[in-house]
Amino acid sequence: MLRLVNINSYYGLVHVLKNVSLHVNKGEIVTLIGANGAGKTTLLRSISGLQPVSNGTISCNKVEIANLNADKIVKRGISHVPEGRQIFRPMTVYENLELGGYLVYKSSGKKEQKKAIDEKFDMFPILRDRKKQFAGTLSGGEQQMLSIAMALMNKPSLLILDEPSMGLAPMIVKDIFRVISDLRDEKDLTVLLVEQNANAALKIADRGYVMETGKIIMEEKSEALLLNQEVKRAYLGKDKRDIWKNK
Amino acid sequence: MNHSNQFSDLLQFVFMGIQRGSIYALVAMGFNIIYNATGVINFAQGEFVVLGGLIMVSMTTMLHVPIVVAFFLSTLVVMIAGVIMERFTINPVKEPGILRLIIITIAVSILLKGIAMCIWGKDSYHMDHFSGDTPFEIFGATILPQTLWIIGILVIIVFFFILFFNHTMIGKSMRACAINRDAARLVGINDRLAVMYSFAISAGIGAIAGIIITPIIQMDYGRGALLGLKGFGAAVVGGLGNSIGAVVAGIILGVIEALGAGYISSHYMDAIALLILLIVLFLRPSGIMGSSEASRLKDF
Image (tube, rainbow over all chains, first blue to last red; front, top):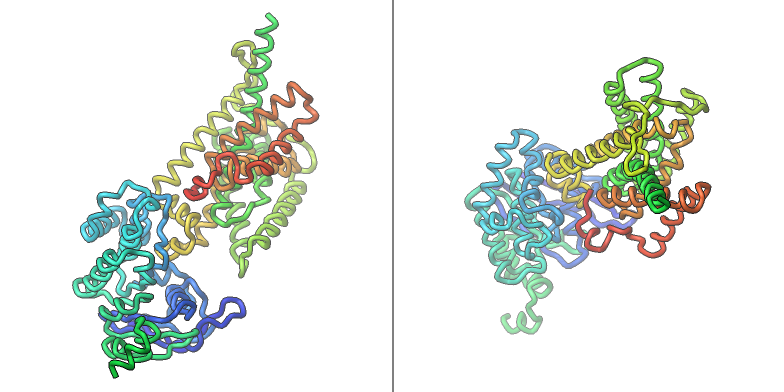
């Protein structure tokens, strides 16, 4: 469904993405793990059109989308939930959802937009209680729910999530991961997930990629990655000693 | 008797101040809209005011278009000029850095000024007041009907402004761009288009300011710079980006200016306004309404 071939990207002179290739099949949850500064966020930003790609191809259902404007890419059914809960803080929860459904409003009018918002309220009932509140006053977990709900307003076929668990309590992280796997199971959503919390991410993912200093260094089924010595040591927080002991 | 004289003087100055302040407020709103959309100060804002005034003068005195029609037509023409400016000078910039855009707006302002001079020459233009110029008296102070027009139109514009940015999808999408550009792009809002709308609206508000002030100050091609500067002062005093703050600051600035002109010396009128700008910049650079709270809840 989504296929990246040899893409490169720069921040000024800094070469951030070096010949990155990756693919996501329909209905899959694919996770991308890696240390800070490996280029995971940049990779996601280049898929959604926020970061220019200097060469290589990005295609979605065989249509080339590299370097399109972000709004064109959203129209193609790719929604990106950016890192750090990028909601419109001085606006109410309801207004945020309205804006999430900006394209719905433009293509099918206010009624459809409202219907879509109601669906999101059914999915995240807490947002309904908070709908008149300013988004900036929500708790971290609620803001993350809102951010995901906004991305879902466009009924995407591919949802890109950038560190949805960042700065959240473990209980809430659990909730959010449950929501993600439910979305895949019930709505047939394809998910590309970037996570620091590699353990949790690999548990719900089908496949995983490991990224290091701008390159993809590994691609495996999640179960295999969870057992991989190198991944265990570098990303799953297992001690070298534990690994040797188990050997 | 003496007391009542003093009071009517004061009232007179306050009326004059509110009248000028309303214009500063409108210019400042124009600055803010573009500032929120692009992060730059549009130095051509004063030129929009001049264009509005001069086009209105030509339409009413030379073409004898009825005032109401001319009002909307002139505004529309200037809005189109704003859109053209954005499409041809701002939009094509590949890497829109703040400094680069500001210099472009300065260039456009010089260009517009030159065009205005070529078309209208260097004369000042007089225009009839909207509804006669017989002043009426309130507590000993005289007030021109035009002043009421100015205040009324300011109120109407603020009303529509709030309506537009809070209750229409397009206004909300423009606010969204100002609050968080990337997030706005990710929900499918075309940020470049939002910038174009902001130039249109800002030019329109500038033009209206020019139209309503022309009967009082007589418009000429070179007035833009000072009007723009005063409006900029109001925008900064009110807290850049905060349009309600700009309206309040504009009126305060106008009133202080008028009081200074009345009680100290009318020669220092402009100096007083700029002195206030300096004081605010020294003591409270975020503006009187621009607290950390306001910048957190940054809004149009």
